[in-house]
Length: 199
Image 1 (cartoon, helix red, strand yellow):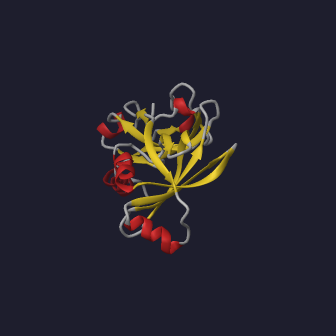
Image 2 (image 1 turned 120 degrees about the vertical axis):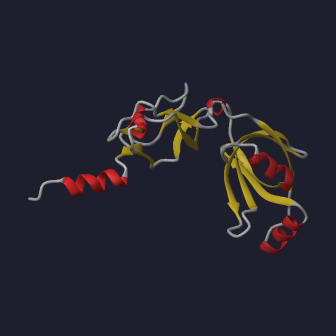
């Protein structure tokens, strides 16, 4: 399950691109918290602390106890991050206020584990889905979806409906969506074509 982390935040009154850029130069990430039953609050969080938080997480799907100066602690889900397209630095972060009894939706990284029988026989594994959208309660949020592919033969596909998700976790995609497929190696395909009888 994903770990909850505490993150300090402070209200901010400054808006406008010039003031927000100044805030970033001062070492802050402008952010906002919103959600059902919560008024939108403009915040700022320490840029280095936030970068460390992301560095130690397997994805950007993070649940935090947001400790807001003067307003107490709110359970929040990191809804989205705006990155600088050149430097990759965080420009803005959106937090959604949540409670432990309301489901959330997140894209979870999907890892293929093991070596498939088809690959051992000379095939190639192709992964089409690298993150699966799931819904679950905050306390059930997984960090990753781990999938064993060792039984896949050449020509086999792994579908979302065949994945065993952790308790309380449900995929939002259709069950027939292909996550991975074991195909023949290119050399084998060329050889088959060369030896096929002419029509």
